[in-house]
Length: 266
Image (spheres, rainbow, N blue to C red):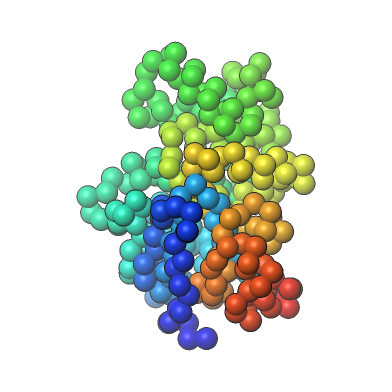
């Protein structure tokens, strides 16, 4: 396969409009090209999974969607990523506002060394919200949204570092929800968690997608099959195949996809 050419159709959803659209996207770390001509439409209020072997570019693409890769010296891109039809790389875009709209949950939970309440209230406070009553409402709503409220409502002012790994990861989801994002990016959010904590977060995605568009990077193909509506298989910086999850896992159109999901490589 020519790494400089992609024949994958972006496939906008039949169930609704595209929330994110990636167009002819190349990405470079200095002289090294990490993504090649990626075209991809991500539908609103669905879960889209990126799968592929380590180093295939899935986390790089995810981090381009809220411009986290801007922080890397020598990083540059060609092509466009649109959210609701607006190019996120347009000079008029406020990056802080973009990262409010496009939240991120990382592989390793990273709660602040503050109370549970302070963790969730941090974003709204940063945006200038001072009303204690409104903050209390946001904290409760966000913790409920992350499926954590009942477990922590009696210890909101205790350190977040006292939570279990799975609870800390849900706290990070609540922290992202507090600023009312449109999109939630999740970079292997369950890779450090046990099966029970993983199951709780997977269940959460089904309720969250009613309000949000979710993009998840995962090494766990069973997880992608369980939680996502659409799946993109990436290899060596290319988008090899993209489509409805059930179809991609049961009847892939590309041999490379079939080889990966059947364990022949990766």
